[in-house]
Length: 100
Image (cartoon, rainbow, N blue to C red; front, top):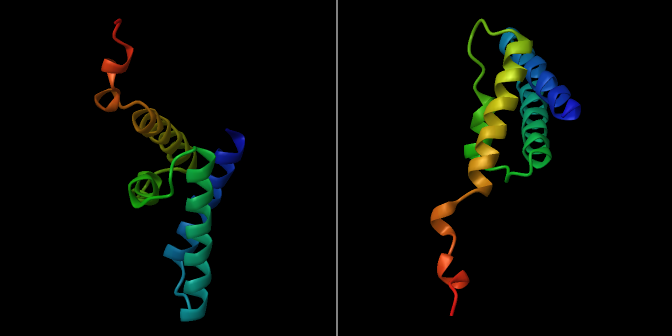
């Protein structure tokens, strides 16, 4: 979990750097590529596909939030959604296990 937290901290820092600077076009592409790579790594570390649904869980950083609160909230949200992703009772076929 420490690795995921460090990735989220890095994501927070890069996002704030990008937000606070007037960036040249070439630098913007580097920042975006970096953010996308971090997003993908976070999703893989949580064993969820790097789809927009899961990336949006930590992509939007509210104004005025501290890094510690962002990391804690993001880990909780990702953990909850990971559980929902793997537990789908409506897709389980109980008929296979009925006694003959």
